[in-house]
Structures are given as C-alpha cells and as structure tokens.
Amino acid sequence: MNDLKTPVARLARLFRDARDRWKSKALERQRRLRAAQVRIRDLERSRAYWKARALAAGDQTPANGTSGGETEAASGDEPPMAMVPTRVANHHHCLEVIALSLQLYLHASFGCRGVSWVLRLLTGYLPLGVPASTTVLNWCYRLGLAVLLRPLPRRDDWIFVIDHTVALGAQKCLVVLGIPASRLAETGYSPRHCDMTVLAVEVTAKSTGIGVAAVLEQVSTRAGVPVQIVSDHGSDVRKGIALFRQQAPGCVETYDISHAIATYLKAHWRDDVHWQGFLKQAAATLSHFQQTELLFLLPPRQRTKARYMHVDAHLQWAQRLIGYHDQGDFSAIGRPCVFSANAWAHLRAKLGKRRVEPLRALIGQRYDTRAALCEALRAQGATMVDGLDDAFWRLADRGYARFLEAFAWVLAYREVLSAWTQTIAVSKTVQTVLKTRGLSHATPAVVQAELSALGALAAPVADFQARILQHVEHEAAKLPAAAIWLASSDIMALIIDWSTVAKPPQGRGTAASPGGAVVAPVERARACVQAPARTKMGGAERRSARQPWWRRAA
Image (cartoon, rainbow, N blue to C red):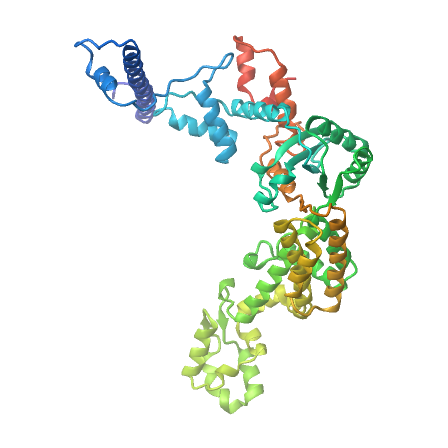
C-alpha cells in the first residue's frame, strides 16, 4: 500500500464505501431470500392442504410415500390460511395490498407516504409488494368515486345535512350527507361519520342558490325527497333550500343550532365595549409576548372563521390565568425573588425602621420561590411575613412583576368575566340538550328546565337566554307533532375539517384545492376510472408515473 500514489485516507474511504455497498447488497439478498422462503413455505402448506381435500373428496387414500407435511395436513384440521396473492386484472399489485393500503389510510390515520413505508417494513414477513404513495392516493380516489356513484336506497324519511367547504382557491364543493330519521334515536341524535351516507359532492367555482337547488333535486330523484334539511343558513344554501321547498313543501328547513347560537353571541357582544376591549388586548398580548418566557400563559389565537363558535376558549384562558395569579406562585416564569432595596424601603415605610433594620443584611439575596424568601425573613427575626402585601411582592418577586407586565389588564375583567361565563353556560346548555335529545315540540320545555338549574342570571344574560329560547321554539314549531329530528350539522363541520387536514400535497404552480381531500379526489378519480387501462408502458411513461401526480404534465 505504501507504493501506491493514492493517499491512505482516500483509500480507506474507498474501502469503507465498498464494504458498505457489499453489506447493503448482502442484506437485500437476505431480505429477498427470507421473503422467498416464507412464500415457498406458504405455498407448500397450501398445496398439501388442497391435495388432501381433493383426495378426500374422491374417497382416495394418500400413498405411503406422502411427505410428512402432506400427511399432517390430510390428518389434521384445516391449517392457517396461507396468504396467496389475489391478482386483479390490469393492476400491478394484488388485492391484499390494495385492501391493506386502504385500511391503513382510512382507519389507521396513515398518510399515503406512511402507508408505503409501513408496507416496505412488512415485505420481509409478508409476500406483498410496496406501492408508491401516489398509487395509494389513486386507490383512495377510486374508492371515493365508487362511493359517490353507488346506487342509493330510496327512502321517504331522509334527513339531509348540507354545507359548502371553505373556499381555498377558485373552487369549493357542496357536500350533502344523509341519515334516515328512523336511525336518529339509536345514534343518540348525534350521528357519527359511520352513521352518515354521502349523497352528493358537487364541485363548483361559484355557489348560487339555483345551483344548490339543482343538487338537492338530483339527490331527491336518486334517493327520495327528504323530510328535513339541516344547514348553517349561508345565503346561497338558504336560497337553494327555499327554491327546493317550492317543489317539496313537506320538507322542513332547520337552522343548525351551533351556527345559530354563534350568531346570537356575535349580536349580543357586538356592542359590548368591555368584550371588544378584552379581545383587542388579548390579541395584542399574544403578538407582543409570543416568543418570551410567558409563552405558556398566552391566550389562544383568535380564529378568522367561526370565531364565536369557539369563543369559550378565551374565557377559559382568562379564568385559568386569574387562578394562576391568585395562587401566588410565579416560579414557573423562571425569574427569582430578590429582596431588593426598594422592597426593604417599602417595609420600612410601612412598619418602621426599628422593626426592619435586621433585614438589611438580606438586600440583594436571590431566592427561587416566595416560600424561600419568607423563610429567610423569618430567620432574621421578621414576624410580619404572613402580612406582606401585594405592593411588596411587586418589588420583591420578579416573576410576579413580569406577569403583571403582560397580564395586569386581565385582572380588571374579573367582575365582568362572571357574566360572560354565564352567557357561555346558557349557550352550552342549549346545545347539549338539542344535540343529545334531538329537536321536537317538547324541546323548549326541556331546555327551560335545564336552564333553570343555572340559577339567577345577570340582566344581559337573561335577555340573551330569552332570545335563544325564542329561537328554539321557532325551530321546534316547524316539525310534525310526533317527530324528533336532527338539530345540528356538526358532523358536516367535522368532515370538512378532516378533509382539509387530509388534502394531498401541492406543488409549485398548483392552486390549493378547496376541501383538500374532497375536491381533488373526485376530479382525479374520474380521470383514473374513465382512462383506458394500460398493461404496458414505455420508458417515458414509466418515468412520468414515478413522479407525483401534481407535477405530471397535463
């Protein structure tokens, strides 16, 4: 080696790389060998089992030369099912891979890339192929399209839940879900995803009442005229339902209770100076202190959409913050307690020089907590430790001073916070009753009984409660006498939120699709199903197929 002109370090690096490549190839061969052994073992067991079944069916006895594995299979019970891949026409992957991929994506909350990685880990134990992430996505698109195109059962007790996705680009889609009225009782009047049937998903660039009415008429033609339609009372949806009810006057339109109460809350607090100032100061505090040691105490960020449907988060934050202040322990902020000269001067002015003179020796000392400072004061002979006022702690506790710098304004809302909490309690009580017991003629009385348990209310809260009860009475009066139907479209909001989270990745130059996994799957699936099947691809086609679908040429 000394005769070589190549440096020793480079030779060592080359040898190391060659060794690593050899090891990776050996591991790959071992993995393939193990997969082949598993496949051979399963096939041998399957062959022996079916051979024994064939001989038994023909009343024949196996020859004495039968192998031990075949004798065991013939004499014993049915062996475990060997996993023999089921081929699907015009598909590279077997049926088991497709089914397992869809189960992982839909029920185990894996993304498309996650499904591909999981199957790659299982290749050493199961005779399965590894689909690309875009292949998994296409299977999900096809499954979704099959759900949309399947025949719907015709019923005369459908309840429709209708809403638009949030527009994230030039398009959005109208989603119509359905559930039979006879099934509401068994769902507790709060249906889950598995209880709903997808009746229509209509992609549109512009939503109008006429378009909504047309979709409702198409769904009614396929599945039957609904007895109730629940919506959030958006202008286009409300107009579309009104046009549709001209052809179906027996259909009842119900205003979703969650959106209705949010609208009443917005009107109730719109002119409240204290409430508007509270929100404004909360937003300013979040912006000013979001990258400091006070991060764990900051208020939640205000939502741009459906703000008054989640306004209770700010009230809960204010209550927790006041409770944190009242407990008097600010050590989590990370600033020490210091017996400063100003704190000593405050005690001298309040108690007299003679009583606090022994404490002069503690000036400048640091302590982790208030309790440690109090113990030090007692050790110096102080007897007034239990009577230390707020002004002293503002000077001695730096964590408390930092807390007041950011949140002193919250303490001023301590009194009005109780009235705001009562308002939220009224709204939560009404929603709980309607979402767990349904909407009927008896609902107003039940709501009134539940609200009476809240006790005496402030005058503004009592006025808010009266308006909410009037709304519930109005919605209940629309229903037939013995009917108990749906009062909320929360299931639609959950589906739309999930579809936004599960949207496919976006490449450069691609506009975000509204509803993510709602709009794009429909359009993509139509192209997948309607395109002719290809059994052989050229080199250029294979290279294009390996690219993500959003980067492929149109």
